[in-house]
Length: 374
Image 1 (cartoon, one colour):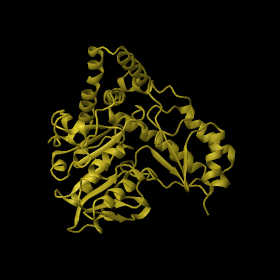
Image 2: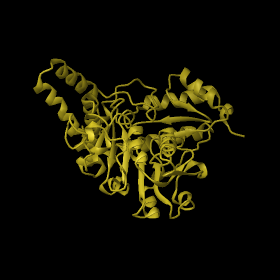
Image 3: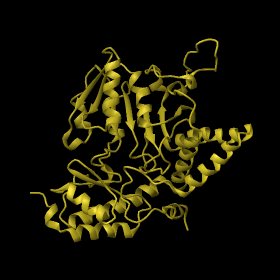
């Protein structure tokens, strides 16, 4: 059995789970390691505490490896939102963002602007179908723009932004800030097109809450003030004098990382690295093809991209009565997310055939006519 197939075999959750874009049930390896680390912390021995502390460096190394970045430029965060806070609160100028972004982006940007005394200004754009393409961004560019923030994969539609094209559009003198929560570990991407990348392990990495990270490239650190820098971001611990932020990326941290969370992130990233992100992306693409075929066969409208290069693991179904569809799927044991006018379906590499058959059977049993858009 290949390493990838070994990875697929670790998906031991019940059939019917198609909600990976909302939460990833913890993997067996993550569960085993966190229990082992907790036992070490329970001893209180300095040697045991030191062993668990090594998880921080491991997580930074592994995340850096998948990003194509230096481990020293990776910071561990309690949430991707906090990583974005470090970026936005230290920025000035005009930042382009979609008005349809997830609140971790839009709300954080708005709060940072309000606290900046007009030094930071959001420039909201409303792209067609919520897709942040170069054409959607180009019309908002001018000399006042200092940064563009974008979700690599849109949480509503699953649209995958073209990071290389966006970088080419905005040029080298503006920052590209990327929320990779819906892509890191499952999309084989060159993240070095960005200047800042934030991610979280609680979805596709199966590592649980608190296992977030933020990467700050050197060119980003030159332009962002570490406003929210805390004790972990100083050059040396001192209780007798105030310390200035360190020159490294660790300036964009508040306190020492949760070592149990760091361990979960390290194991989650290690597992996808060993399995191969390209292999994982390929298997997810096969599942998305199947879901699209099921939706088409039952005459359910889909608002997600169909081209492989423009999508990831999210399929947004857009029926006439989304709440009724969501209820029917729940009654059939199929776990999805209903939000607004869409029902979001998200398969992972380890999603089994039985789960996809459950989806097919549930849609067929409920009656096609209910879901056909006028």
